[in-house]
Every structure is written in C-alpha cells, then in structure tokens.
Length: 424
Image (tube, rainbow, N blue to C red):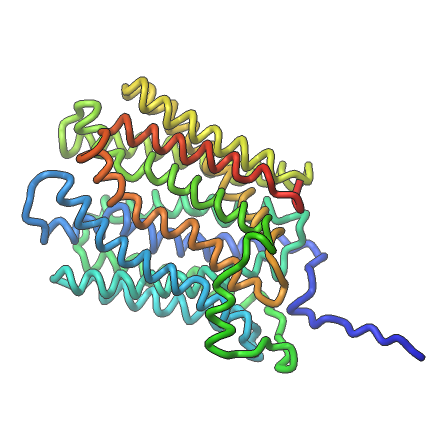
C-alpha cells in the first residue's frame, strides 16, 4: 500500500521565505495612509464636528457626545472585524484571499470619510463614521492577515513594527496638515481619504496573494460563521490569554491618553485653548517618537532573541509606571517623562504583541477571522474609553483615579500573558 501525503495549498501553509525590504516598504506605506485617515479624524476632525452640535460648555458634555458616536462605531467594529476576516478566509478570487478586501475596504473607508465631511447632523455623523470604521475593519482585517500568510515567524516582530510605527507618523502628519492649511471640515476629511487609497493601492498591485482553491474553502453557512466567532479559551488557552492581555493593556493605554487635554486644563491648570493645545502637542510628539523607536527596535530585538512574552510583559509594566507617575506626581515635567515611558511601552507592545498574536492562532484556514477577533481587542477599548473615562473622572474618582485604573489595567494585562505556553 502506498502512502500519499497531500500537500497543503500555498494559501494555508506556514510561510518560510523572508519578505523583502520592498514588501515591508509597501506594507508600511499602506499603514501610513490608514492611520492618517483613521486617527486624524479621531484626534481633531470628528471632535470639532461633534462640538458644533453639543449644547453644554463643560468638557464632559463634549466627551460624552464624542464617546457615544465612538461607542456606536466600536459596536460596528465588534461585528465587522471577525465577519470580514472570516469572509476573506473563504475568498477564492483569482487575485487572492486578501487583496479584494484590502482594496474594497479602502474604498468604503475613503468614500465614507468624504461623505462624513458633508454631514451637519449628529445622526449623519454617527452613520458615516460607523461606515468609515466598517471600511477600516474590512481593510485592516485583511491587511493584518497578510503577516500570518506571508511573513515567517522570525520576521514578525520587525514587520509588525512597521504596522505600528506609521501610526505615530501618520497621526502627526495628518494633524499638521489640517492645522497648517487651516482647511474646513469637508476638505479636511477629503484630504485624509484620497491619500488613503493612493497609499494602499501599491500594496494591492505589487504584492502577490496566494489563491485559495475552491476545494479548500471552508463550508460557508451562517451557523458556521457565527460559531466561528467563539474561540474556546479552554480549547485554545494561549489565544484566550493573549486576547485578554490585549484588551486590558489597550484599555490601560486609552485611559491614560484619551483625556490628556482635559487633564492639562483641569488637572494641571493650563489655560484652555492654545496653551493647553501646545502642551498636548508637545506631549504627543514625545509619546510618538518613543512609539516609533520602540516599535522598530524592540520588535526586531524580539525576533533576534526569539522571545515575545518578556517584551509584552515589560512593555505593559512600563505603561503602568507611566500612569502611576501621572496619578501621584501631577506636574507637566513628570507628564513629559510619563509620555516617553508610555510611548516606549506601547510601541513595544504594538509590535511584539502583534507578532505574538500571529503565533497563537487556532488554525491556518481561519487566520483572517481569528486576527479580526484579536483586532477587536485594540479597536473597541480605544473607541469606548473616552466615554468610560469621562464618567470615571466626572462622577467617580477624578483624574488620579482614572490614571490608577489605567495602571491596574496595564499591570493585569502584563500578568495575563504569563500563562501563554506555545510562545517563549
């Protein structure tokens, strides 16, 4: 009797060939456009648009309104990430599994941003920001999955750094572009949408994407799709611990950063307007510089040492220390140090935790869906933290309590990665 070993199709095999510098450059360029289009509205355009419709003058009213819109979009992300990831896993297009979703998501995202710039009601803002986030999820669920599809484990920390570092650069570039040109709402959103598509298209055109044979496509039923959204932490404990760690650390980071402007005004006594905004811009620049350096340098060091958990643990602990400094020594000089520590910790976490996540996925056939679930742990905390944070500050324990909660989330998130066994 002859034993015949069936070779898995290329789309489902573990990658072994190192990706080139050109591949990484196209990947980083795409993420630069994505982060500029997503984070510039969150930091500037969307709050300004919402404030026009807020009746009260107190900062809490503005944050609550922003939090509601952001929270609705977060609920959309909760569904869109795993759903579009699962659909990309099942795509048998001759262009590959991921590329149709990368391009389609970029177009939905960009068109929604342009239409968002035309809205003059809170309902319209809520609808089109939610559609923009759905496009963002379509695009990034598929693009993130290319790391598992095409990047070998020995390169994933470094490549994930090029997912993270453009976040800092894209945010600063978008903010400076809008502020320096002093442009209006519609032009501002359009100026984010057009480069988004232009920066993503080269990756779609130049990077090959293995085709999934029709015979290898998982069964497509609504029941199977819904069932796939639940990944048993008992059956896949490493995935469960990594997901829990990511949720907690991202909540900790969001609690420590999303209300910094109001902390400068109400906690440190900076005058509202330009003085507080200049101080915030300085803190943001310090934070972003350390995010970029940590993402690239420590992500590569993680690859070289073949270790992930120690980096994730240390990066989470650094963020906790930064939050404790803000809680117990509330001064601007200390805030500068905290911004550096927070950027160092979060930059390292972004790159190394992404690499760790790709190594604990349950199955090759569902990489897109499973990474979509992992991405929820990043997107949703960032979306709902402003609303929760405003409630914590205004109703419960003030800014000191907010930063203490931020530190606790980061510390528990650091501990949550310890039980992971499959990855060092």
